[in-house]
Amino acid sequence: MFRPLAAALLLCLPVPALASPPDNAPVDPVAAVVDQLILPGFDRLQTRSAALDAAAAADCDPEAPALRATYHDAFDAWVTVSHLRFGPTETDNRAFSLAFWPDTRGFTSKTLAGLLASQDPAVTDPKSFAELSIAGRGFYGMEYLLYDDRFREPADYACTLIRATAHDIALTAAAIARDWHETYAPGMRSPGSEKSPYRTHEEAVQELFKAFTTGLQFTMDTRLGRPLGSFDRPRPKRAEARRSGRSLRNIELSLGALRRHGVLPATNHPALIKALNEGFDAADEALSRIEDPVFADLNNPSAWLRAEVLQQSIDLIREQHGANLGAALGVASGFNALDGD
Image (cartoon, rainbow, N blue to C red; front, side, top):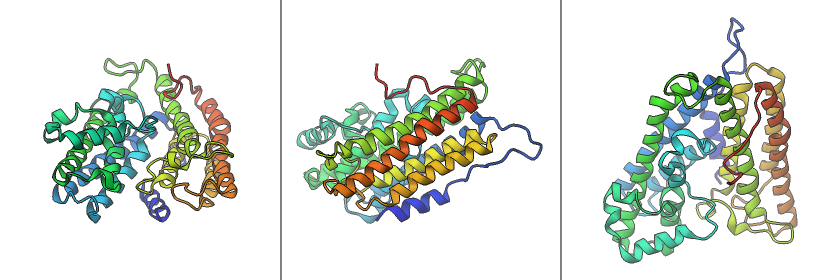
């Protein structure tokens, strides 16, 4: 149901330039990614999160069409920047407050159930709400509130909780966008300057390359790997955002954003752009063959194999094309946030 909408969203996003400027000066990969992907992406998240906040303030009925539509719009915007887990998204655990998933121990449902049972007054104050467990906040917390009947009583408090969650998302998105524009983007463009977190241009390039490869790994291992489980024991109920029907949609949006993230820094290397696009085209073809938007059919061997083909196609991009991109940029992926301590 969501696939045409997701495809339409991707078509509306800015298309990265695939050729060098007329004077044949080489394109700075850092400036290309920051200016054409990161800043517009977080601006979009801020705008759509503000719309979600306004919709919740106007009507907190969990089945209100405007509320659900703006929720999906804002969630779409988050997914397209969700692989950028550095800088402003790391500050104050902002990324986790927007997206606490995977939730392997069910903390989100436990946190929300506790809030509803106790009717904690912290939800009436934005500062107090921001100090609550991140497990009950963000897009995944709101998914339970909008799409799971168990979290709708008492109705008045559930309404307040929905509004508090939407407002918290909007505040967090605005803070991330502000920090990118005011400090982090200038610091990435000017490594070695007093306020830059990067000593050299190569460090900034490596940060962006690491985000690209880590994003592919997360989509492959977590968004797909968790519901896939094994051939003998698929785990479809572990699919991301299955309650709101977004599991496949999030993979599609993620791949679209990662394609742009890979192509932009490769602008000076036309052959590499061609190879990257071929790799992502193969992944898109594999994705188009998946029939269930929440992977509920993985107990069917054919459905499981189709999902595995998609996983393998993403792995090929990560290993082969990612390695070629890293070599062209003169960097390696290095440590990433999925490696653990």
